[in-house]
Length: 167
Image 1 (cartoon, rainbow, N blue to C red):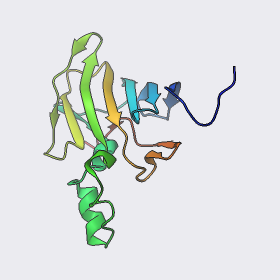
Image 2: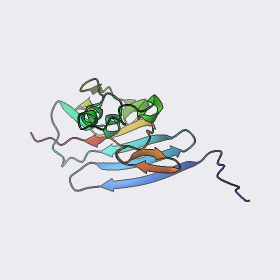
Image 3: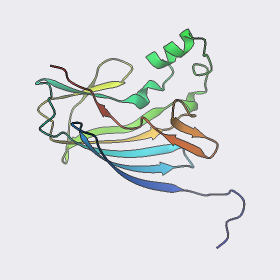
Image 4: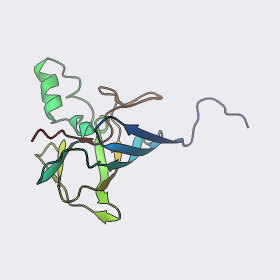
């Protein structure tokens, strides 16, 4: 079968990745990249080993992809240093998130954001066994290693990151 030109009706890329780093959580991440709609569906299972020191009340995660919105602190910093191109993008060129859920097994876990920017998310410490974050990212025009440009895709900072606890 011959492909003519660059006409691609749909392309789905499934990617499976296991990442383990020292005393950090164990990530089992499954991705589905839709190049027609510039979306990335993420299923990030995170196991928190008992060797990790966790707070007694709230476990916090950083959602770095939420920094790539128009009114985020990242965007404000870009304006302060004279980089206005980020601030004046079209609405569909920013990152956005849909269908965000956190589960422990089959049970949904309630979560809350630190502030309106929704870049930091907390869950009650009692829900700390095996967490699964499910969501779909509408990828931005490439920003700091995340997004797309023409037919190229950069996938950095697309998964939730456990914030270190120093207590």
